[in-house]
Image (cartoon, rainbow, N blue to C red; front, top):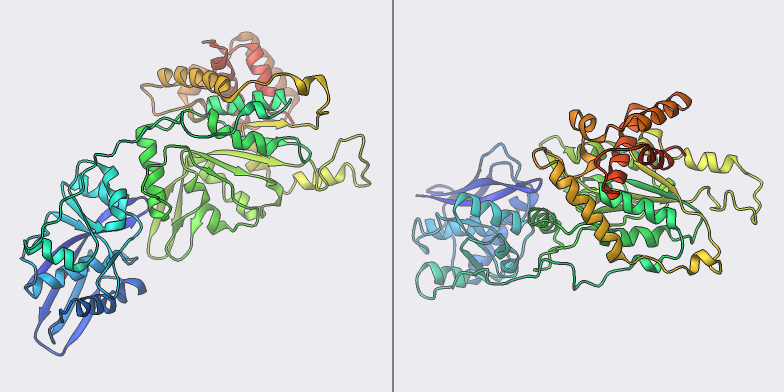
Length: 501
């Protein structure tokens, strides 16, 4: 007799079907798991054997074969334990044949028969819903699975409960998603832009970046407010859409950072400058997502940008363009989404005070040139807005001016984003930073005066085609903030200020 159990393998953020086939035959007693299992899966047989012994069930002294189909797909993780155990319970007659055909099963077994939580429950629940099946998962993962909505979920504490349910001795009520969550950010405590004194130019640049989805680099001495601006940037962005919320939480589920409640805020990732390439873009033995994927639909803030290893920074070039990253391994290629906004900050030189008349340095200006050269030109070319954040006198009149709050700035950002949503309704773009090809020429081409200014600057400066298109995109965003249908000369002029450094 052969039992067939449905479970999954995770490929990036998506779940794919794996069929667990359990067969018992006469012969020399053995317990073999085949179908490209990794060491965690291969060790599953010991956990399953011990768990069954703990509830007074013994495996027959026969030849047990477990096949994980498709056999050419690498199987990783401990979530196969419960599916294997269910197959064994069926073939030894403890649970009726066919009773779990309409379920996808995941869970790790403890040696005492308990069912322990696993990662990837939310994408598994989404997959089960798509396939029209229910889900059997650990008790602790139940609150995560219900956010898929519309599927039958059995959240099980141990094997005894599971056997009792399918033997009709003690039925377990399926979880129902009757939890309602406020998907607005109104009640979330946030930083406020009015806390940043002065820096009107930097605030304007931050507003443009938020309105158009542009990457931004802030350059200035220590203590001028670069980190404060970056941490407040997240709160002037539009709220996540329903689909974006699910994408963010699926990645949280894979990385085991899901806490049972949907995260409705955009991610803000702030890796230390000592991080490795694998930590930044993803990798390791099992090709886990990195910081750029955990920042998907949110912000990646790189403070002290030149202090990051050159190879780590250059690894961002392709994800910034393609909005995804593919991690290549000998046995698989895993793709993760990377649609994030890059916010970077750096000092003008190693000591941090280049250009400050009150501080002398014997290495000026070479120290500033050498420090900036630690960042490759192609990466800098992919950053739309470059803005200086100078030191200010806190006692000056400008610093005492009443600053605009986050709410006021966000309202302008939302108005500009709404214009872009309507403009690109029939196109595959969400913001000005994403437009290309014919859409760029149709919507971002300036008027005659603006084009004359741009041509004059192009003749006087060596600007790449990428820089040219990014100037047009930023100018389009500036025009949207001014509620102008046409990109004009003053919009081009301001965009050039943020580019020609």
